[in-house]
Length: 258
Image (cartoon, rainbow, N blue to C red; front, side):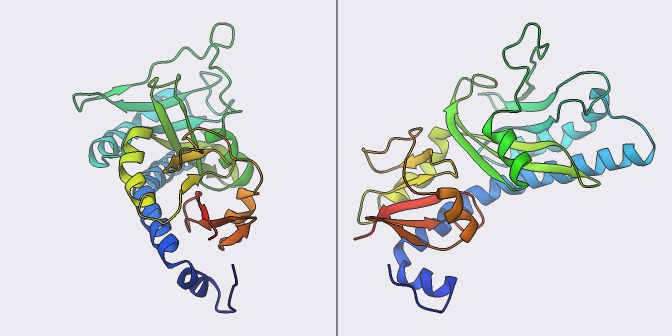
């Protein structure tokens, strides 16, 4: 794809249909990221206040986050789960903790109750999962999955997350789950409007939603460096593919270059 010196605006003009779809995808997920940002800010404020009082945080303190989490679950229709996941060692009473709440099928809200004892639980070390590791390692927002969320819902899901920092120190992630079926209902019709078989991938190359039967949701796409495309924030070509970052949302729209 040729690129004029006009910058991102010129690239958007050259890729007008793709850029329009990327913008719609961004708008769909930015609403979820807004909820994540509210959880991040509320958590950082709580932990900063405890630090100023020279008090080590504990699980009982995180109960203060619950009214806001409940509100986000009932207010944002795409969000099926939301919460704060503490970095190991942050809390004084437990080695690891998820202050996590989920929406029931009847619209109610319930807590996620997990056994995180490393002697008994396969879920005690969540630090290697993308929704935790990517924000911790990059300092940026992340879209992880889709994957079968055995930890929370047993549903095929995406997790959107952002790092939480207090006085420059990483203390955990704020996050929200989106059921894949709900995300696909919102974005696959947009992908189907494009002239070629198109799909969305995250920074790891995992397909998040697809209108291309050769690239099913959850599969991995090899070849392009999608993380670099997101970092550059510009459309580019890779062989016979056009790669269009969804602006501030860490997903890349992949279409035939034509």
